[in-house]
Amino acid sequence: MKNLDYHIESHLLQLISSEQAFHYNIVPRKKETNHLILFTPLSTSNTIISELEIILGYTISLEKIDKDEFVKYLNSNYRKRDQTQNQMFTYTSDFLERVLIDAKDIGSSDIHFEPYEETCRIRFRLDGKLREQYKIPITEYPVIINKIKIRANIDISEKRLPQDGRITLTTKNDEFDIRVSTLPTLYGEKIVLRILSKDASKFDLRDLGFTKEELLTYTESIKKPNGIILISGPTGSGKTTTLYATLKVLNDKQTNILTIEDPIEYTLEGVNQVQLKESIGLDFSSALRTFLRQDPDVIMVGEIRDVKTANMAIRAALTGHLVLSTIHTNSAWGTISRLIDMGVPSFLIASTLNISIAQRLVRKLCPNCKEIHAISPSSLPSGFEIPKELTTHYSAQGCSECYHTGYKGRKAIYEIIPVTGDLTSLVKSNELQIDSFLEEKKIKTLKDNAINLIKEGITSIEEVYSLLSE
Image (cartoon, rainbow, N blue to C red; front, side):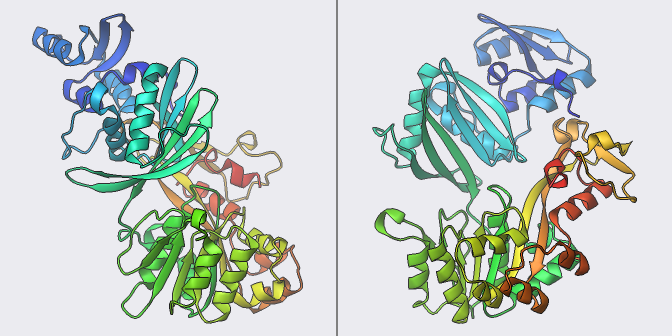
């Protein structure tokens, strides 16, 4: 597990940027009024001290520590940015831009601005986990909020209702979109920014996490000229990425692809993308109705939220179109149960659903520092039956390669149920208990795939604990 002894408080971290920490070989240790004490593995130099005092605006003291200890402090708390982007910002005028570009450069997916009674904290989501990155006085917060709202074309005078907007940020080397969501809370508006890459052309089905058998089953289902493909999972489980990678495969000059999304997260050349606008009556079901008059071959619906959208998707599939969509359920079979609960006739589900998929994103263990241990029942959920072949597992430790998190990168795991003849009969008869059927057909569940990742040393028990307990 990660060694928390090397954690530096966020109010100290924000005093020194990532570039300064790596360039000068310094990390903050302590702040006393206008005096800043820094750790460094280098010999003390009056020139460096003078330079740092001018840059940082504090009286500086350098405290020498062991090089290995320093590397642990540095890599546990700072991530090295892309060196091709040489942009420095001041706290007062360009603090927002600094936060946005820092988050993008280190691979953060979301930025949370959260106000409290005396301070506001800013957290980044890295590899699915939130980490506190900055703290600012609550008196500075309204300025930051208004800057975000103005850039996102949001009403700055409205503080009582949630609002949504979008920012496009351009740097010398990149252009990316930021989805903005505001929420009124006790001490002010909480804002969450979702960082979106504008280009979906880099997505590839082969790189997402499918096993060879799963990829073959999935690609066979998307080759069908009509039917419905449903992907389920919680928010942030990679459903949209899987859909765009699928559209990339289907996208050619002979195919008319239409999408209705909320919001449009990525752009894909050759695909006609429509932004949902419920305020003027453009919702999923009404857009689908219009799509059917646009001579489509493939339709992607961002999410099936209600029975109207579900029925329109089925109608589109029955009239010879391939429909891709997402739905919020916990398993691939749970998707079918959910549609039945929504009031969709089971015989229509059986005749239109090509494949049901559930997916999750799991963090991969850092190959440089993971440690092997014997399996202990105490590390597993109560009642979990340990497979005979599962005798060892790996745990996260932390090193400079993984910024002392113990994990490096993520991959998706899938549960794929193709709707074939045998399963069609079960769906039509409303038979919802199909564990024996899945076992007979050797269909791997999310739990099965999680166990395989533990066996292969790709992830830890802790990371997939919730799947093992299901």
